[in-house]
Length: 273
Image: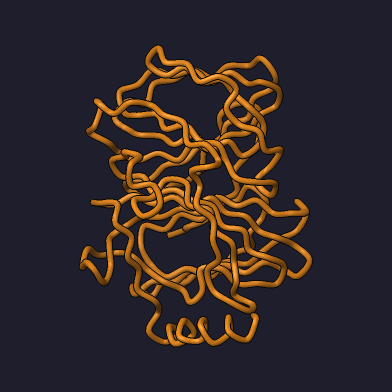
């Protein structure tokens, strides 16, 4: 089975050509000034993450004016809009805008839409040395416990030039709390400068293994398995990560052959790495 794809980045709505996940889905919306996209969320909840630009949202009659601000994903924290299941919505571009639309099934049609501003996005560093990366938690039960959602967990990661990310490789494919929680996951990538690349290594306990080149607008779809990413020297990779499972508590298990690397993080940080 194939677990990665390159998305088109055409005007309008762009969707992956394949999707091995049962819960998660994704679309990339690109609009020019004054253009409008209208749709219904149906039985899915959506988090509209503004990748760059501004847009006005109308959701079930509620209006959120000129949401957004950063020019691109490498320049600041995001604005996002939660669109609940059972909603009619429209998105109107205030200038050129690019919006990520991860979604997951939801039976909670009574939830109200809301905006997540940059001030609500929690930042930090995972790892150290050449596997240091910078995260932004947008919609998680740990950082935003007061923001309701049925399944979606969403954040962003920037991986510096030459560094590894999601390292050691981990999985989250069974509910065995507090050790591990079942979640599908997807990574939607951007690269800066855009002609650059990264590398992704995916493998699972069924014996499947896949290595692929991370390009601008590529997507990695992971219903299960271990995964890790590296940025080519000279280039920064960004990925929007989003998960969905039976609950919203996150817990992962490292590859037992590589997990010892986690134990070096505290020491490396003490040494200034």
